[in-house]
Image (cartoon, rainbow, N blue to C red):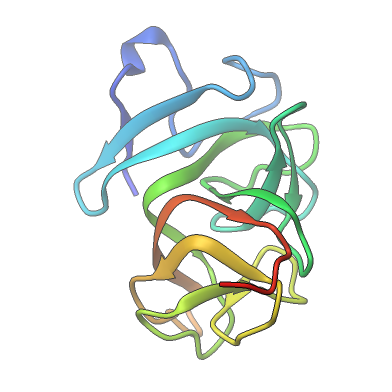
Length: 163
């Protein structure tokens, strides 16, 4: 992925960078474009342990911290653009065509659900664990990467059982 921030000249770190100190204000949202995946929106957040490229997270808008997506989570959801672990800073995708971690057997054109595997999603229906405003745009690339393509539009989890 070669996303380029439209305001890169302002000195923002690249979309796939991980920083040991914050390079822009936490919670900053930018638009960036990639020749393959098109345009998307990205938010600059504080990382959490065990984050890998493509990890799904929930984030807290009050302090801009992240937690790996898990069953029964509540809050806005994003996809990590780097291995942005604890005490580091980086970009997370919140809209556009994203590439995220998915469990083996994940199918194209499916809904997205949190799993017991923190940071990964699946298409198996689990009441209350649907990631709303997200759907798959490819099957998982197994076993080489464990990644799949998704269409996201500021996804969120509310732990509600209604669709």
